[in-house]
Amino acid sequence: MEKDFVPTQNLVYPLEGTVGWKAPSNIALVKYWGKKPHQIPANPSISFTLDASATRTFLKFRRMDEAKEAFSFDFRFEGKAKDSFKPKIATFLGRIETYLPFLRHYHLEIESSNSFPHSSGIASSASGMAALALCLLELERLANPEMTLEDFKQKASFLARLGSGSACRSIGGSLIQWGSTPGLSGSSDLYGIPYPYEVHPNFNNFHDTILLVHKGQKTVSSSVGHGLMKGHPFADNRFQQAHENLKKLRPIFKEGDLESFIAIVESEALTLHAMMMTSQPYFILMLPNTLEIINRIWQFRKETGTAICFTLDAGANVHVLYPESEKTKCIQFIQNELVAYCENGHYICDRIGKGAQRISTSL
Ligand code: PMV
Image (cartoon, rainbow, N blue to C red; front, side, top):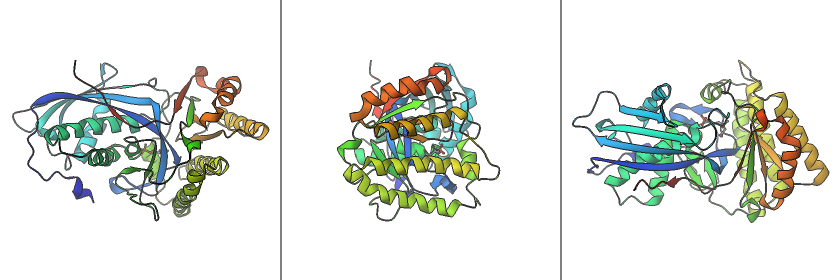
């Protein structure tokens, strides 16, 4: 329950210091699309935690003599003050204040940078909010060093969710499930959990090459997109389908059945876009090059039997997924046939990762 995340002890918080965390991005296999109040997902989702695409955040904190009316903080992104981002952070701090009641007592200097190029069209909210949540919770852990690692990760995921839903899947690795669903032990709407069942070695070291078809801002923000699922004519069936796909994935993960994995992952990606195409107002977020890439992947798979597939997030970029055992073939295919469809030929070679890491701040 939410109240379990409110600190109960009287803690003595540090006067000042600096903490740092690096949090990865993640790519959903079963998509979260549609939410209830307080960032509660309308359906469960599961994602691969990524490795290379990540946000690094440092938080410098100094206790003030008295608590302030408004949160006292500065935000710098890639070395420059970024005031346009402050309202989003202030909203986040307001949402998590009940769970980190010391926030108004500190002046916070937040310094973030992304490993992926700015405006690459890659959503940075998941990694960004996860890294910030981890830094803020680290401040609580300094006052409460007894906190177990499991409790720390669970609360970090809970807090990150309140910044951006999918951020709750960017704390741990490598396969993270979020959203309560029957038969999945420990699943919760409040935080992500490491997938608790057997996963076949076929999924170890899985690759995700992100093809940057369009590097600009997304035309529809994810909060608008989630909102469009309210009253959507296909919403109930879609939410039900996500539960069913999660159930179907259990034997697939166990047995390493890549063919059935592909069928679910690609269908999920196209369903996400189908929901946008059938909402009011309606959108098409794929571009002609997105479809060219999808068709080429299908053709290559048909001709070679390679277990390569695609997934999409709420934009035109394509995530190309393939197992470690097929990486040489797949990278060659991507370079020969797909990179031509990327904006300025840009793409990011990523793979499944182990989750967020603390960054040392000692000199
Ligand atoms: O975390 P949000 O609110 O930006 O939503 C993310 C939604 C998708 O990326 C499209 C799907 C997902 O599950 O990550």
